[in-house]
Length: 357
Image (cartoon, rainbow, N blue to C red; front, top):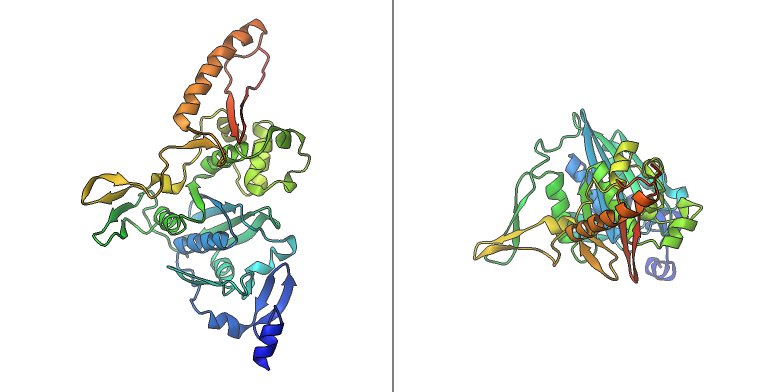
């Protein structure tokens, strides 16, 4: 009889305590325990890896990690372009045994993922754990704040790990098991499914701004009247000025100053390159280090078309600025401006802010 009910019902009453709709269920204790792999959060790095796995399993193709530390508080914001969480589930997902993976639990190098305990465990160990913005098909933004006086992390958070290829053609990692190393290991493990970026809040704002400019059309940017209809990781491209950019960034959990946003718009803060592009794997049999994928520099790009190296785009914009100076002189405009470049599938767009002298 049990087997018949399991086969006939898409949501088994023997595994599910509550069905919230949209694929979200609360597992029964027995089912959660059956899935094993305790989700104990012992340090900040555990928060990072569990949040990454959560984004990956929500089918995110791009994951952006912003992190900073003020006193003993570690601030973490993770933004992705995954499936998203419906508004009525924002609080429920931090309850025990709530998961969207009834039939898709996953085993990876960190254990089983799908018990509905990861976000609950994070929330139990953090000062703050919340969904900043999320909805179905729009991706997600999560904010976590931990007290490092209680939840420890590696003292050395600045050392980038080293990677070495062994005789068995596997890759070993050396360096402190800090946030950078955790991010690199996840990026390597997920090389075929998603791209990961890590930086300060200002750097991630710059990265999301560049990412959005390369994926939204001019008409989408100009005629959008409701930013909440745009995927979270693309909303910063809607900014008309530094004040607006600061407002849009704060809405998705990235609180930065208006001055910082001006520097982003002026191109003074360089977007982060994908984590994998920073990894060089040393092979003892080869004097040259290899990279896990073909990519060399920070790119201004639309994934479907032209790709420009960051230094090439900057050199091009420098020439545009010089050409604009003559026009500015004749029409009494401020010549000292920062042109911006956006590349899409079938067009290259240059925008220059007009300021009267």
